Length: 170
Image (cartoon, rainbow, N blue to C red; front, side, top):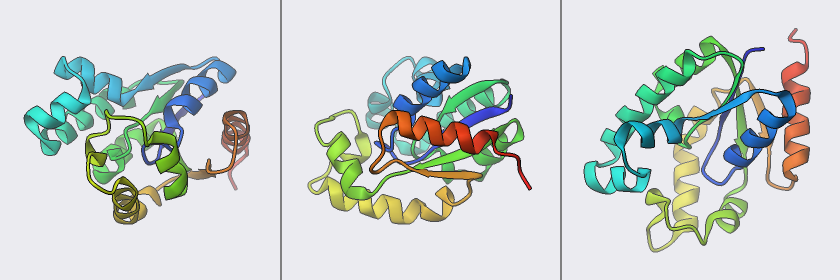
């Protein structure tokens, strides 16, 4: 089976859906954020604060290149992985790109208590979420499949991803 690549904004459900999808399909799950932390030897928030976003994005592209060489995996990506076209091209070579979408208010509710999100350590996180979603919309549109997670349970999202991935292309 081709890789199933989950993209989407933070809080859209990529990690949770990815783990459940891997269990359901008997596929190993690879998280590019985990690969970044492994390569850096530190948490992503520490990479951001120590070296900045550009350095993080370079590491992220290396992690994507590594994950893209694998087969029969569920690949969970960071929310900004789509910002570099090379990442999407690499991921698409052996995979189908599934964009998990969620509305800004839903995202905010899901992640408002988390302190490890460097891009949201601002005065008005909901406004920042809206801003980032607007900026990233054309990049997220470069998907093969779209699933809106806003009002669905994890199982419903997994069911929809499985159904769409297995659907024959025309």
